[in-house]
Length: 310
Ligand code: FAQ
Image 1 (tube, rainbow, N blue to C red):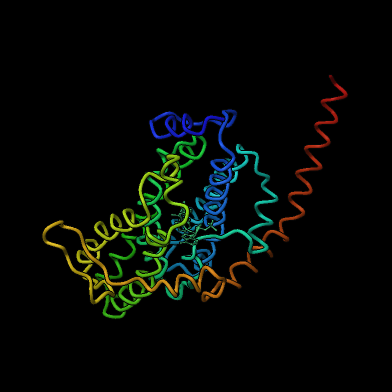
Image 2: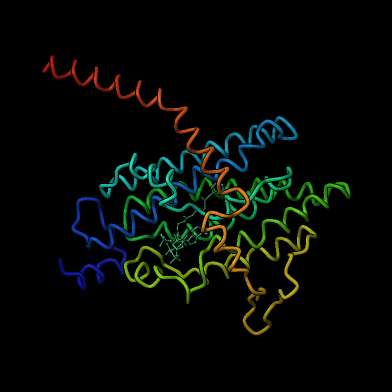
C-alpha cells in the first residue's frame, strides 16, 4: 500500500474505518495502544473498588459504584475497538495476565484512605481527560468514537472527585490533612501517566504522523499541570513540588524534575501494588470462567436451533 498517501490521508480529518486498507504498523500500533488502554480501565477498577464497602455515606457509595462500573464499560468499548482491527480479546487478556502487555503505572499505587478515592477522581480522571479528549480526533474511527463517550463519563468522574476533595479540604483539620496527604501521594504518579518525556518516547513521532496521537506526552502533561495547579490553590492545598513556579512570560507552570527511575520501576512490575493488581485480575478472570462457558453454550445452542430452522 502507498504509505505516503495513507499518511497524507490520516493527517487530515479523514477517518480510517475497519475495512479500509492500512499499513501493518498502523494496525499494530493501534492494537497496542487500545489494548493497553483497555487493560488500564479494568485494572483501574481495583484501587477505588476496594473502597466501595467503606464509602463514608450512601451517596458517596452510589457515586463510587457507578464510577467503577463505568470503568468496566470503558474497558469493554476499548476491547471491542481493538477487535475491529482483528485482535482477539482472549489473546489480549492473556497478554495482560502474563505481563506481556502493559497497563497504566498509576494503578499500581495503593488507595490508603478515603481521600485517595477523591484524589483519584480529581487527578487520575483529570489526567485521563486531558490525554483522551484529543483521542476523540484520532484517525481510527472506532477508537475515536469510543473516546467520545468515555470522555463524557470521565468528566463526571473528575467532577465527583474534585467535589469530594473540596468537602475534605473545607472540613476538619484531620480531613484537611487527609486531603493534603492524598495530593502528596498522587501528584507525581499522575504526571507520570502521560508517559516518558518527548525525548524518551519511542512511539510518539510515528503515532503523531499517523494521527493517532494529536499532541506529545509533554504537551499534554503541561496542559494538565496548567489546569490543575489553580484547582489545588482553590482548594487551599499545596502541590508537593518545591520547584513549581509560574513562568510569567508564557503563563505556564514549570514543575520540578519527575522521578523517572520510579516510573521505570513501576513499569518493570516492581511498583507498590503491581503483583497484587495482576493477581487480583487473574483471579477475577478465573472466577468468571463459568459465565463465559455458559454464554458460549447458550450461543451455540441458539446457533444450532437457527441452523435447523433455516
Ligand atoms: N504506564 O512512546 P510512549 C484510565 C509505555 S487512564 C504504563 O510514549 P505511546 C482512566 C507505552 O505504552 C490510563 N506504560 O508510548 C481511569 C510504551 O510501551 P510499549 C490509560 C506507559 O503509546 C481513571 C512505552 O511506555 N490511558 O485508564 C505509560 O506513544 C481512573 C513508551 O511510551 C491510556 O492508555 C504509563 N503511564 O504513549 C480508569 C490513554 N506511559 O507499548 C480507572 C491512551 C507510557 O512500547 C480509574 N494511551 N507507557 O511497550 C496513550 O495515550 C498512550 O499510549 C500513552 C503512551 C500516552 C500512555
